[in-house]
Length: 391
Image (cartoon, rainbow, N blue to C red; front, side, top):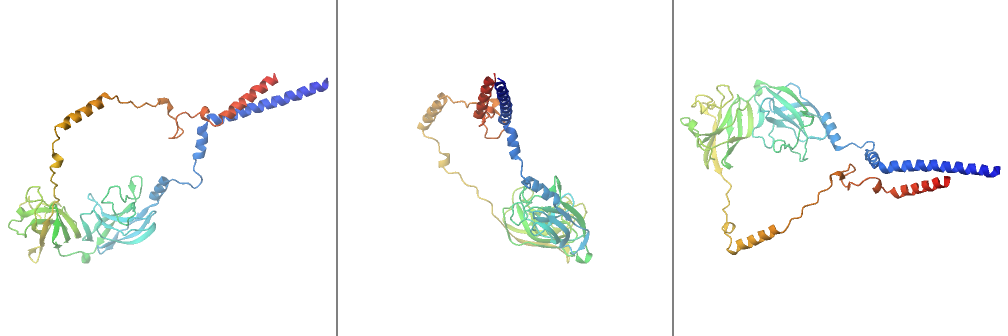
């Protein structure tokens, strides 16, 4: 009898242990089934050393730096003490001030730290390509990426190309004053114009040197001081002292806005005689901002301008022909048929099917869609059997 009682206690203890283990298994499986988002979150963590492209870009901007010191130069180049470009690109030199006009761009630089001179040269899209400083000038050096990887600075051609390095909205830049000794400054004004082809709205001047600053103006025909205010076609804004290449001047015919026609034109260097940096030659009736002179004559050059305007295509008769008498009835029938045919309304997705588990989700994630659901059912069945046996 005692043996039977002892065996009964052992069986009961084993069933209690099995019961507790079953409960533990059920709890673990239920937690796994009902919390798929937790598993997804763990898997989505990046492994050690995995850094996003955005983070790389931020670090590159933060590490970019440039140092430009005050210096004395001949006016044809500027020395950059140090420029660090993590991804390569360009050092861009611009004149400090409201216009912030670009005066020089370095050759394409590889990733790393550089030092050396940047020669004044034009940039694509720049109407004022300065080749020489004519006086002391404050310049700003800014670092730019070569974002389209073509080895050319295109920041003036497209707003989103070759953007500057910088941390947030602050570009990587430095400024300094470049002093040009008097012996190195240009002393004589000069201008060169070759025969040009244009659309009639602009004229490109080959070269212009303004020792004291001023303007480049375009006149109709050969320059004649007796009626120069009447023949003026256009002029640049104020240009600082120095030399320039490929200067673009907007022109118009006479006093209206119509383009000029083919013919002879002259370009003339005008001084800023009143010092206000505004071209007042016409408004002052020739009293202010008169032409610069060399050996008693105005500094000017003359050439031929050929105007080529784009042709406007003439519409063809076929494109504007009227429909035949039978076409209206055919069109009306088609429209009537289309109106009588009901249009199916797309089914709207239930608002409660949104899910945080990814773009390909059907909105039904949960215990029913969990692949462990059959196992859970089996465990619950085992738990029920053990409970009945225990009783």
